[in-house]
Image: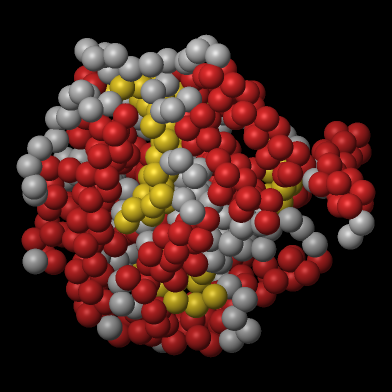
Length: 483
């Protein structure tokens, strides 16, 4: 491509423009520091102010659970009085009540100036979205998290990616992350992510997801919701957690935004603000084939086994996928969607399942402490990595598998026939994740102490539980069963 055309192409690419704007503001932040116009600085006797940058406030159950447990862990390690935590939220009304005692600030869709003004008010930034550095879902989200870390690093402050995953990135995002996260510490939830960061020259450490310690609503609440949806209290519950795998990534598109405003075009692909889901005839056909395959496998399975299927939307965006699957199932199935059920109730519901088929990573993670036998129909590497760690790679399928219906039917029979074995092996995988989460807490303290050696630390001792948030009784029972 001619250099002039390349320059014009980059100028018309909103993701690149966003990254360029973010880079300029990070450089301005570094200049501000060089001129001694620093932001907030920690002094002994005062709490450490931490800003959590992530995807909270969209009723994405996994994202909200992750952040809730990070907050509990940080408060436990530092001492509640020593940690003043602020969470960015896309819509604080949708995350209200999730993080008691935590300040929530609205993250605007166009965020560079917000980060430029908000990050300096804190002593450090914690990027907290699981899919932290990858282009599968939205370059803008990864730009926000890497940009937040870059802002903190430009001021010589704490910059940590917590429980992160890194994967395939566009060339511009890869360059942006390599440049602006190079002085951060990124604690990863699996080894493949560490390999990606190693290639970018970014400091990294081993960790885990933070959802493992989540305490949902009591089992009686989940049972109440299930009975109100028609469950008899006895049938095996089959939880199915679909997504639309083919309308990602979300990208900013000013032309579509203008058409939407003027004529109403592209409404079905609109995400929010100037952001739109990917949509084409091919993507719609692939999504229909994915739903047809899952429904076909479940319908065939139900000819031999009397189960109670439920359709679970772990994010509000999953409602169309759940509705599309519902109309394809013989006899239908009740919907449990996060736009109507908060994270406490939704996880309580899925922990009653005896079988699960999920395209949502956190549906599997949050059900594993209850021993729910689960299989994945995966959109990317997250579920594949989880099943590999659980020693169940045979329970992983891909959304574009041309033989998905037949293979999923076989997996459903395996979940049914080998329920006790899979349940036992699932429970056995949880203690290792908790140990890694404890290690992540230790790494967090080491990094914080690198900046503030005099900061008081409440956690002490060598036992893993000393570095984890207080464990709920249900999880302690799981640990006893797994011992």
